[in-house]
Length: 470
Ligand code: URP
Ligand code: ZN
Ligand code: ZN
Image (cartoon, rainbow, N blue to C red; front, top):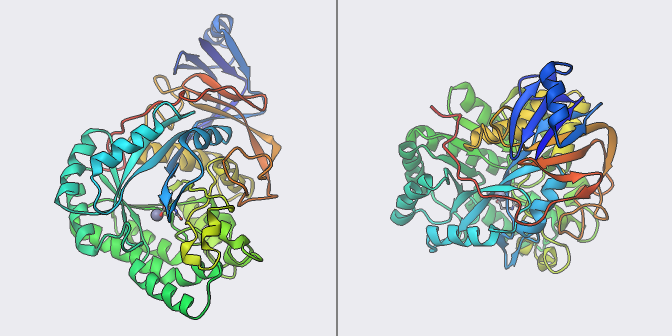
């Protein structure tokens, strides 16, 4: 099947041009000048011509942080690989990197096999894996080498969740030394979980059990402290570091300082930390705040976190926007913590809305169009060894392409979203712009407000080393 996309403005991380895109099978084969002989010949020969007049044509989104079916707090994230990746496609994301999970005492390779089994034949879009290491020991350190060879080139460690995923400083240092050796990226959940658990226990003892207390005990200082400590450990080990789901200005400062010192320290934030806050969301009436329980937590609107994060995205102290998509329904799932916020499963679903929500940065003048593409597609692809195939529209790349209409609005609601969630964290939000058409390796997944894919369209990708490291 050959496809020609014409009349659109092609936006990359480095610029925008009026070009036509010729696709043959799964790949982009040429970018052609409109009106040229080659473009004319391509149009005559194409089996499918897409008119993108008035629209942006951008590389498919790469969401580097999702948790389909994640077991957490006695339940599982409510999106399967089938439902979650279909929702991602609706939102213009054509690749996810999900986390295989090793809990303390489990075998890493077995946990990875389990994740392959969950995803194989289910996905609407392409996918790859990071590996969570829930117990750093000699076996897992050895496994890191094996996994890098298998295309799992990044490992998430936790300074939070004692007894579940927590790694102490010595364990973190050892894993970072291993990463220095084998070229892997260490991803860090940077919150001081030991101190948080003390504060949480004290809060519950005082009878403070509502969802908002989740935010109160997970203090910004404890995110900042852990971020700073992770940076120092990375410096000692000579390893690169990628801070996940950063929410506090103070943590951003630690990242910015490390980057100013020339370190290979990177960070991502997520739409929830740019849009949602403690007062209006986590402290919503009744038990509604449970829908906003995630870690790191939402921050106060009376401080400057949102503005600082948008600035961080602009000046590249924040390199990536991912969703940390980890949905739980209110019914039967978030409700587990009705009497104790500690039992609310942590996570917010948003895989469908990332491209739209970050595009608002362009509308508001915070980001250029190019920076939007860079944050949502090109940098995550480069950061995690997928670039060339993903994150770019160029000859040889996978034809993962989003046609984005800036002249239409998107209304976000539980009634219209495609995620398997019984609420929307962004209920009632109306944003400028809309995903119009989505191609994944040349196949049309979304067009004319309909889904045209089938489960199993998505393919597993082995990743290379980060292209941000020497
Ligand atoms: O609340 C969150 N972020 N849930 C997912 C697990 C994690 O720590 O990323
Ligand atoms: Zn985390
Ligand atoms: Zn996560």
